[in-house]
Length: 227
Ligand SMILES: [Zn+2]
Image 1 (cartoon, rainbow, N blue to C red):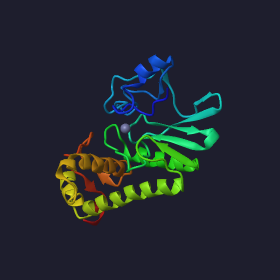
Image 2: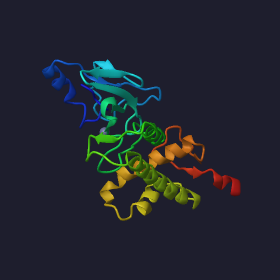
Image 3: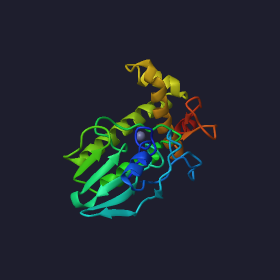
Image 4: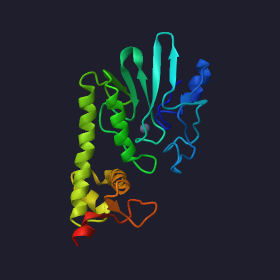
């Protein structure tokens, strides 16, 4: 039994189902600290696969061969599976059929997510089977590109706020998500934090906090050079 990641709508039934079917569970890991010191799962911390798998592993049976593809971003332990016989990708929550995925720090990482989009695009799959939404049967790489563009547009909007001297995520959210229900603003703030941490990693934004949160102050580095 293959599990893409340790979220509560994915992994909790894996063990009982595997016990019922008499098989083992396979996943990257879950609930254990990673090299980044983060948890391997945002919420199903009790899940641990019987067999830990990662990039380069191949799992096969009669008539099917699956390549394991590590795709951190949505969670740091996310996996996709490539079905060789159909040039298909089981994308889990990395690429959803109905909307862009959630990338919420600390388990989610926007830089990793963008690199994981590249990783799936490079494989030129013919079809993607997400766990939420309809399969993507046509122009798979165009679909991935549209998700990448969505994130880059959001990043550009954040940079505009930073360039204007805004340092505060909740204020950016109020403006960027003005037409969105306020109850969703905390989730939006986490998404903006995901972008911000990517910009910090790239050296374009700075913050005094070693472990930045949505309450941290962020500064666009170019501002220092011009002021
Ligand atoms: Zn998920």
